[in-house]
Image (cartoon, rainbow, N blue to C red; front, side, top):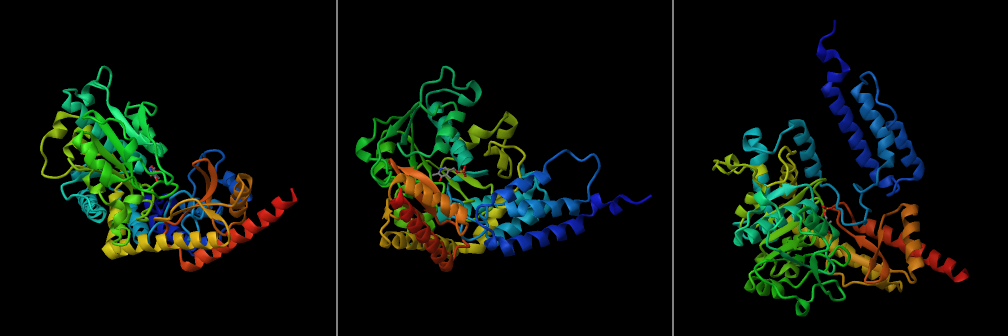
Length: 466
Ligand SMILES: *Cc1c(COP(=O)(O)O)cnc(C)c1O
């Protein structure tokens, strides 16, 4: 009889080297793939689905199938010409760290389960606060993304506001609680509304403040605020990249006794760059912040960060029992997060920030913003209308009538050189370009711009015949 180690199911080393080799090959070729997968490749994913095998399969075969049928069907967002949504790639250090962390199989819920995960997470949070220019006394949590970061920070806000009225929301829920007024900008990100709905604060129960042409909250249009208000600002509009005027609004809100939360999923990272730091002036005065590491800092998914100035509010919102509240010698990660068991995603953030350093993060922000400005200049000098002030890494462009813009976006996606999505900005159909990846080079920008201009010219020609 063979030993368990001889069974292919246990042949870990072989599988690991095989997987690394396949991943290496994938990344070496990712820029040769069409950025959006072709439909035939997407159909081939079926080969991986089907019925559950009755018997074990060789793990190398499993990984090999994944690469054979899965890799060609991927969206090439790990490449250098994906400009959709606001995504970013994965820095080499973050990718390497994620492999090591997967091998470690640490549970980052409690210190005793993984001192290394707990310590590196805390260091990564501290470095993040430093880069974002936030006060050193802040505490935080590493969660799956900005949606959960908004959720966690707003849970802290909810705790703070209701505790002041003598209401214990964690114990009693919201039935019968004094009402909280939530104020958001007209251009609030849907994920923040989702967070409010999960917290029982209701996505339609909000007061929406009118915005200007860039999507910035208008200070002159603020409603009355008081100590039962949670005011949510945005640092980095997902379309225009614009910033709410925090420096004007936060002092007013604080004078009224309101809690100020900031959704800064990508925009807050402008603080890391001396050239762009002026955009976040005033934001450090807020009470809580949500941001993403999987966007501008180019950490892999899933990695979001909630930061709270008086972090006892976050802790009070997240701890589940009196025993949890007993003092411990160490920070317990799960006392600040919605989750209990979770992977050590803070290690990837640690690795990304360690590999970039302060100057690397600044340079990443500046470089991607420079690429965005080049796109805007190239498109507008060809006669197309750029709809936003390009203050950071986001560009909105119209190619003319809505149908023409829509067909340019569709044909660009089909052509495969690069990938941009479409959006509607204040009633105008636009193509949105977000330059968020560390991997994008000047050459990628020129090549993508040429494809955009060629396709736009073709679409214009076709439209003249209809
Ligand atoms: C991306 C984004 C979110 C949502 O982030 P996830 O990481 O996808 O949960 C929230 N707010 C803004 C402004 C964003 O750009």
